[in-house]
Length: 133
Image 1 (cartoon, rainbow, N blue to C red):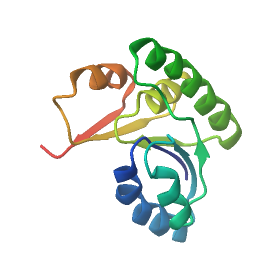
Image 2 (cartoon, rainbow, N blue to C red):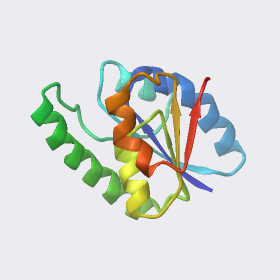
Image 3 (tube, helix red, strand yellow):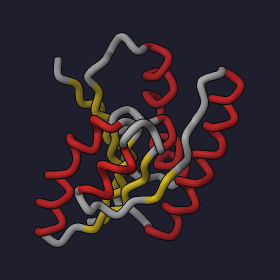
C-alpha cells in the first residue's frame, strides 16, 4: 500500500515515525510531506525519514488562505507522482482536499476537537475521523 503522510507540527513526527518504520518493514511505501515549522525538518532528518517540504505557512488570515492554495497544489503534484492509496495526517486540510480531488480515502487523527475552524477545513473531505474521545 502507498501511504501519503502529511506532517504539520513537530509532534506529528513523533506520532508517525515508528508507524512509518514498522509499515515500511512490511512492504508499504510512504511519501511524507511536511510543513517547515519549528524543528519538524530537523526531526525528520534526525530519524532519517525522507520528506518533501510544503513550505512554512503564514500567520495572517490572507497569508493562510494563499498558503492553503500553494500547499494544496504542492501536495497534489506530489500525490499525482506518488499515486497514494490513502492519505493520513493529524487533521490536515491540505491532505483532505487533495485526497478528495483524487478520490482517495483520508484518515484524520485529532486530539483537539475544540479547534473548530481547523476541523471545518478538513471534516467534509475526510473518510475516517479518529479522536482520543
